Image (cartoon, rainbow, N blue to C red):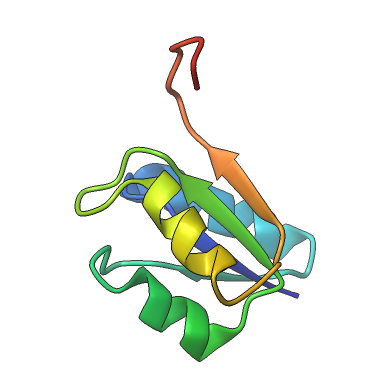
Length: 85
């Protein structure tokens, strides 16, 4: 199963990827946050792990873009602590 990781903190992204590999999952770590949809379309993941705070557009934006073309499960990963989040 392919898992797209959209996380701008490289340490967290690599830790997630390593943990997913232990469960025989195939992590795909995004490196270019301006082209998340290109990576999504090229890899056809079965799950997306999506950070909220990203450099170019936030995770809410990318969630909306993914939802325009797919119903793939999306799990938000974030350290934000605001009650609205």
